[in-house]
Image (tube, rainbow, N blue to C red; front, side, top):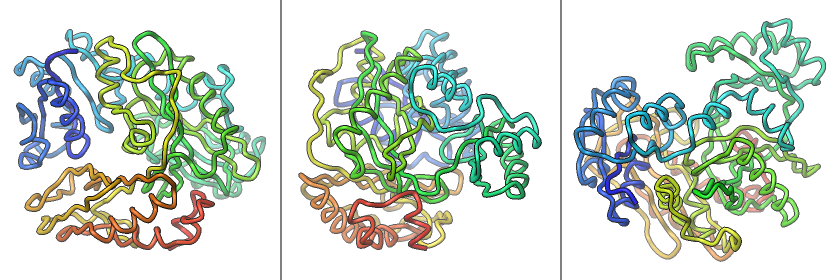
Amino acid sequence: MFDSLLVANRGEIARRVIRTARRLGVRAIAVHSEADADLPFVTEADEAVCVGPANPAQSYRNVEAILAAARSTGAQAIHPGYGFLSENADFARTVEGAGLIWVGPGADAITAMGDKINARNLMAAAGVPVAPGTTEPAADLDAAVTAAAEIGYPVMVKAAAGGGGMGMGVAADEAALRTEYDKVRAFAERMFGDGSVLIERYFPRVRHVEVQILGLADGRVVALGERECSVQRRNQKLVEESPSPAVSEELRARFLAAAVRAGEAVNYRNAGTVECLLDPTTQEFFFLEMNTRLQVEHPVTEYVYGVDLVEEQLRVAAGLPPTFDPDALTPRGHAIELRINAEDPKRFLPGPGAITTWNEPSGTGVRVDSGYVAGNTVTPFYDSLLAKLIVSGATRAEAVERARAAVAQFEVVGPKCNLPFFAELLENPEFRSGDYDTGIVSRMR
């Protein structure tokens, strides 16, 4: 194992990575913006370096500043967390070109899976099911209209370079397509610097199920079960659970086999996630995208499979074998994660502010991965995630009941907070039954 690790991220994920690094005896180095100087991840690191002002482009996405911090602190490796530079292939190449260890998949894999059209085509060639859709970008509106007519309405209009639920629109007919195409293309050019658009079949009732994969140092790719991610607002996840209540043993075997094929197709190393759409009626699933990084929702997999995924990431990057037997992975119990955000619980609009009270729940089967404490200020410069509440139980029913109790105990005063939404969700008959889909939040609102 290397001796020192720089964490090129902030908030709860930086704190999470630092915790595992220090447990392993690895010196943990934080980088932070001026706005984040007082956050827990900065004080808990062995060393911390300010890399710029609040604007992420001048701090957390500032490659030169991050590499300078690595050089000045003697860091041997860099963990990118999620978001920011985590799926930037050029950054991965630059890190390795500087003689540092990159804790993540190779730059070629990031590049291959970063373009959704290229990824779809690669997966189809590898025998992974893909939804009906274009195999190359719709060059203009006329091409999009022609493709949609062949695929059949409704269709999803999607930015080829997008991610995180951004850059997508649904068109029920040609008139809507003409509006959504221009909207998505303009958004993609502005946000991703690439206006390429693809057209896919849209499934009105669908579940979002993903598989955690890990590419080992010896070249094998293993799958650590699936996660259900169908509780979403604006195509962005709010709740994740494992195992999925919609997945049978037979379907799980097909999911995991397809995810392993996906990883093998790009010689994947380190942690990644193969995201799919599941038609609950036909039990068909289709490849959506691959996230070439650690996911926000990784803790539910850690509970169910008894592994520390950050530790496994570090071991792969160091060329070491896993701590577990890849041939004896068996899920045990159930885990649920709730994303506690600084946003109002009705419209989910951000509401930053100073935290005057912060009381976390505790008890059997309760874990909180937080980025803040009382006295900190939630600024408007970054994602609204405050903390992740993770609960586990022997059964899903037990996990749901523990989640209800934990939400009632969790107290955040100051910024807006979506805890009341989770209290409502955990009483919702549809969610409690496990028979829900990606439309559950809109039906609640």
